Figure 1 (cartoon, rainbow, N blue to C red):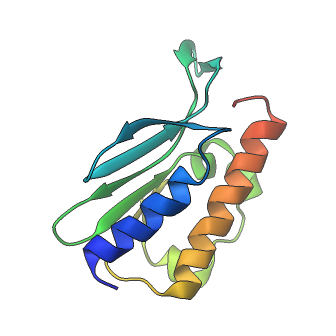
Figure 2 (cartoon, one colour):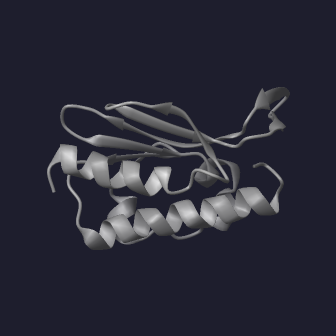
Amino acid sequence: MAIDDLFAALKKRMLDMEGTLRARINTDMQVELAGKKEVMQGKQKVDGHYFASIVKKPGDVRFYFFPIYTHVDEFPEIPEPMQKRLKGKSCFHIKKSDADELHHITDLMQKGLELYIRDGLV
C-alpha cells in the first residue's frame, strides 16, 4: 500500500472515532485526536487528553499512540508486525501495510479508546 493510501486508510479509521474523541488537527498531512473534556494530563489541566495522531512523511506514516504510553500494563503484547515498527515508547513508523496490519492498528485504537473511557479521560 502506497504512503498516500496508507495515510488515507489510517485517517478514515481515526476519524471514525470522532464523537467520543475530537479531531484537534485534520489536514492532508496530519490528524490528531483528543478527548472532549478538561482533564489532568500529568500536572497540567488540558482541554482534551491527547489520544493519537498520524503524520504523513515522505517515506512513511507516523502513528503516535498515547494509550500505549499511559497504560503500559494494558498492552503487554503488541502484534509482531507492529513491534517491528515501534520506535520509542509510543510511535510507529509504517512504510507499507496490508489489511492485517490495519486491523491490528484498529484494534489498538479501539482498546485505547475503551481504556480512556474506563478511566474518564474522554
